[in-house]
Image (cartoon, rainbow, N blue to C red; front, side, top):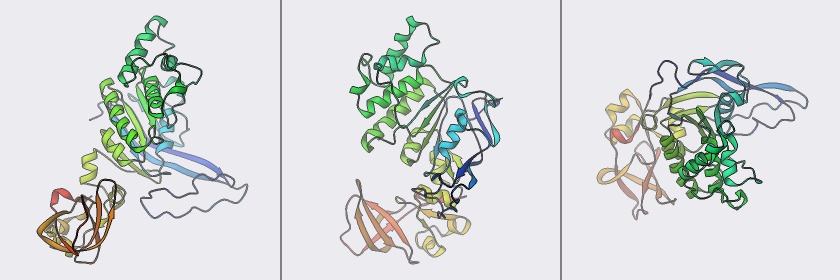
Amino acid sequence: MVNEAGAGLGVEDVVVRYRVTGNDQRYTTPSKRPVVTWVPPKRPAPGEVRTVTAVDGVSLHVAPGEVVALLGASGSGKSSLLRAIAGLEPLAEGRITWDGRDLAGTPTHKRNFGMMFQEPALFPSLTVGKNVAYGLHKLPRGRRPEVVDRFLELVGLPGYQDRKVTELSGGQAQRVALARALAPAPRLLLLDEPLSALDRGLREHLVEVLGEVLRRTGTTAVHVTHDQDEAFALADRVAILADGQLLQLDTPDALWRRPASADVATFLGYSTFLTQVDADALGLGELAARHVVALGPESLSVDPNGLQVAVREQRGRRGYVSVTVLLPSGQKAELRLPEKIGSATVGVRTDADAVAVIG
């Protein structure tokens, strides 16, 4: 999707900085899934003040009707960037635009951006219907019930208008929060890990619901998440951030097949970078001579006539068995199978369409 004539959201060379004191513990814990080796920053002495750069020169555009996911480990700057877009964080440098117009000086409540957070933040004293209608103050009272009914049906909760929010499950509460965020027809919806507190099964289901609702309403959205499956399933394009910098912005398929760097490939789960010896043995020697080639967990498949490799370890996972094999050079690679292998060796193969070509 191409952004024409500056239409939609523009993020241009944005920098966000925080002043941190010696008593502030932010930015002193490692990322859960670091892209590069984490080195603990020097902790300031009590009373000492230092500046931390949370977002470092990020530029991207989101076209009308497009969903872009900001994907990264904890501390990568994705939530700080989202808050800057919302107007909740001041910019040290750069600018945020909408349809080419600079939003500097435009307060959060006048940007017409909707927001949805990890916690539903519903009003417990109000019914479900009144929660959804909360942002419809500009709409005539007579039309509000119609809009509430429409959006509750859209999120799969028809007939819940008079239900108490204290009677809702976690998934139902997030659906109500989504309906409330969309009912005023915001020109941009900002989602800050709204599904991360839910159990995996419910989260996977609500990802489908959220994606369908955003597309049916044509909503432009920026979605923050640390979950790769969620980002790839929901977004038209995915922006990978690390240490406050944008490493790559592309479609899910392009990211998976053509990571811009080894850091991006590693973050996405490519754990084996082929030596020329291994590439030759797997029939990818010509490709590896021109590019860096990486194997992911599903790059290898079983072929009795393929390259015979030693089985080193087998572990049961959710729905598959992770088999660690040893390539000719001695480096390890992963093979995913429905059941364990009963022998010390296995034949494997791969092809150019099943690997990542770096750069």
